[in-house]
Length: 340
Ligand code: URA
Ligand code: ZN
Image (tube, rainbow, N blue to C red):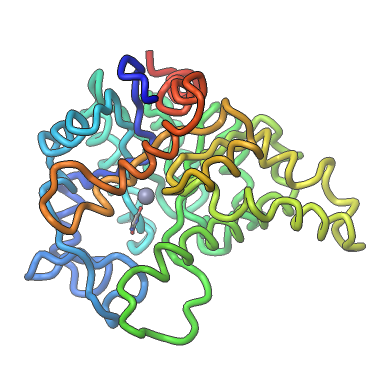
């Protein structure tokens, strides 16, 4: 059963500060908000159908968010800017906007709200902004899978991981670009990019990151993975085996990939099924799984007050024993992000 007295924390919850909304409204290409209030974010959305999703008050209005949190018995949310963050800007604009947004997020902090900062798009700017994020006391950073354009295993990106480890800042790795969108649009809405593209993108980016040896260089580095780590909990054995049997790679790492996946990573519980959660739990144990909602995405298609997307994840967690429920719903997040 779901213990009603537990402290519930949502670690995967997006927020668009007003200045970001205004910028998106001013743009003519994706990401943008159209005259009909459609939010276009995914790479293919200017040309595919349906074009975007309606932008609703939930995206940027704190009262709507608090109502949502009350409806779903969420005590605390760690909010983060949603994809594609500031990645579509030039370097100077990205530096300025990410720093302003981090101040916006800081000013929204309250006993019920804290935030992950966002990052600019060049390595020196990121390293500098990490210092700012630390000073503001934000709870971590949200990080896309492309690094500064050449992936998270780009050797030039290493100073970012070095600084994350040095400052003890957790990176929340979140997808945006998708993978394998090769045959074009067949009127499948957002199902392929969101259900498959996102988790596979995370899986590829994180496998590459592990193979680059980054966790041997920075063994204290901690990462939170979106969407329950994509298919990593399902494929880790295959990844380990391929490393063991590849002459080019088998001596490269101190440990097998699954070691890093168990020791350097936390996972949100945004997997939408009991089986998915049980697989994740059997792989990483009970201390590294954290409830999330992906709010304001996946709202009900009717105007029901309760969100099925949220309840699916809550139901999966509440199918487990009560000690695990307490940890996954909030206690793990309280501890990891020092929320008390
Ligand atoms: N769609 C997005 O673009 N981002 C999310 O986080 C969820 C759905
Ligand atoms: Zn998300």
